[in-house]
Amino acid sequence: MHHGPRTVVLDGGRIVGFDDAAVDVVDLGDVTLMPGLVDAHTHLVFEPGGDTVGDMTSLPREDLLERMRRHAVQALRAGITTVRDLGDRDYLAVDLRESTSGLLPEILAAGPPITTPGGHCWFLGGEVPADRDALIDAVAERLARGVDVVKVMATGGGITAGSSPHQSQYDLDQLSAIVDAAHSVGLPVTAHAHGGDGIRDAVRAGVDGIEHATFLTADGAAPDWGTIREIIAAGTYVGVTAGRLLGDDTPPTPPHVIKARAFLPQMLREGARVVCSSDAGIIAYKPHNCLPYGLPEFQRFSALSAEAVLTSVTRLAAESCGLGARKGRIAPGYDADLLVVFGDPTSDLTAVRSVSAVYRAGTPVDLSVR
Image (cartoon, rainbow, N blue to C red; front, side, top):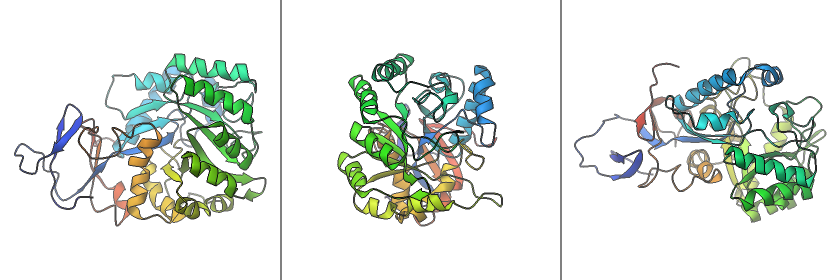
């Protein structure tokens, strides 16, 4: 980390170097310049606190796409310059990614998550029977539609009626079919997985990332250290979703979540690659600008230094999304996605919320309308 004045030279949306003697510069004042944040797990199509199932089964594409655009702008104004959308309806995130209307974060799209009939997030339209051929066809469909990553619901989830987070939806053979089909055409796979069996099977199938990795049981959480060490040995990224706004009406952290995060410090000490992301949109206190607000919570769970927490939402998050060669650092050749904040976030993580300026590919973001 560089302390003191520093002039970053931009050209064509990229950082080309540093020249403290340059004269044609924009003086940002007494601030901290850092890479733009990367939210590796978000759902732009979800309205926080809204009727998720009703909206997904009834609203027109045009309405949902406009909502997603609004949410993307909200994230960008908070300094989130890259978002990986891990579940939409009708491949709308692909459409938004290709849009040329207005300045948006860089968007990586998964399309509808692959899930069992009636399984977690079935209402996004990604229901696929637990059959190898059907699952291989589902990957081919996503490739044809232009996704950047394949998302699979290896276990159930909390927002879907009749779905149990600790129970598996696909077995090892079925998950392997998805991973093999995706990897054969250059697509990464990340798996939503809460229960221990689902996490183990997803890792052994060769997924690139595990979302949540809470090791939930029917009545709490119980980490399986054998599986955790397989995660570490495989270099699988673990996405911990901690972003949320805290207010008078925000419920306290549930006891099962506290149990599910109690093993994070040891997991990190043993070498796990853990990314902090938001799961924005999934619930009322997770609006699409919530990632910066989750950093102190993530620090409490993880026992990491402030600098390591910042790395988890910049360089490491970019690497988990396959963008490590051009995102997440302020270095020559990297995208000029920049966040400027008042204060020093390496000593106080809440400073990340005090946004002075945001640049997306070298273009300043209009912060005047929230």
